[in-house]
Length: 252
Image 1 (spheres, helix red, strand yellow):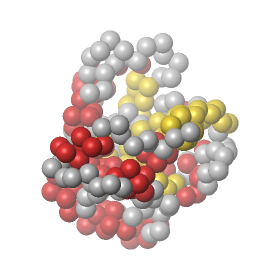
Image 2 (image 1 turned 30 degrees about the vertical axis):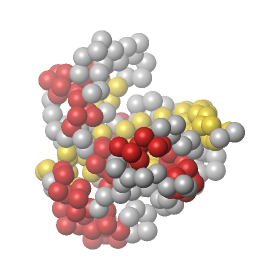
Image 3 (image 1 turned 180 degrees about the horizontal axis):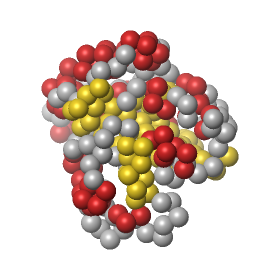
């Protein structure tokens, strides 16, 4: 179900410790992200949600990084990707001009085409039960409607609603099964804007003692020089996940 900026605001409120964006910053995002997202930034600024575990940002924060870093990814024009938010652990949400959603994890250079997953999902086996639970009779062309809906552009507000959920960040655990972000706050301190907790990718285990608090400008300089690209394809009506290792482009 698609939601609006107003519904997102009702659910999550205004961003905390918001920074007002400049006119130049807003103008530079036109045509790159949805218009109502730019209007939201202009009205409310960019700040944090979910106890500083998710931060809104404009594309300008990463414009010196992604176009070069992702230049070698096949069949993807990296100039058409724009950052609009990032998690405390350095997972950046990227919006593609065509209405597609990607994420990039800075610590391991993992690029994920999430839209490819939703667009290759087979119809659920319990489609009739889903309609029944909603109190609606299943139409005779329910499968066709499902397949048609897969091709619609992503909803940036649904993406942000999930990304700013406090519960989703509480459910991130370290290698020993303990909630990770509370440990990082205790050991490294609270995050400010443009900061993340950055994991040492060479560490054998994912534990809090292998993280540092870094400015994003420093974190991007430590991103690995190989990109792990994950996307989904449809083969014989079934979804298959493909993984590729791609040399990173040179970042200025």
